[in-house]
Length: 160
Image (cartoon, rainbow, N blue to C red; front, side, top):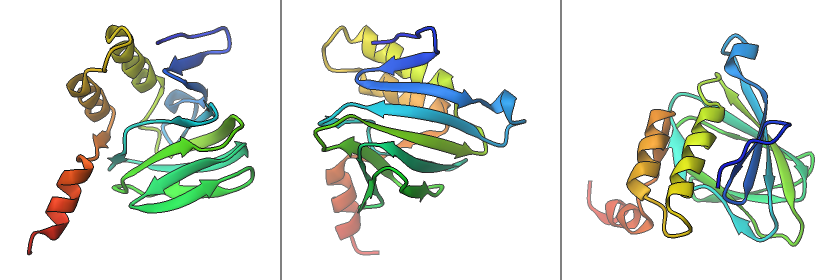
């Protein structure tokens, strides 16, 4: 589902995103956005990005991040930096909604990504999303989808 409200909130499935600073506002140095994550929800497919770091600062509730197989809870006032190339994703296991602030440096990531992903989800009309189309959008915006879990474990078990 895609929606932009009067305060420029972009709704992607259950996730609500509001950009506070875009690339044009910071001369390309940072983009800043706030994310609302409903209770008991799982968010984006695990991915990495090679062109920017993403710093997460907890505002309300708690999101649980998995970053290169390490689990980090981001509660109000907590912060974590996802470095370039680290595979990550997040969930809200809690009973209350969570909000975090995300800062991408440099500002290679913006609202167009979320709008395009929302369009792919809308096109699925409630059915399974087109994973190939999602992967194309991700790559176009500097995100690399993580390989499926079984291919990661298979790759790790092969001799070098």
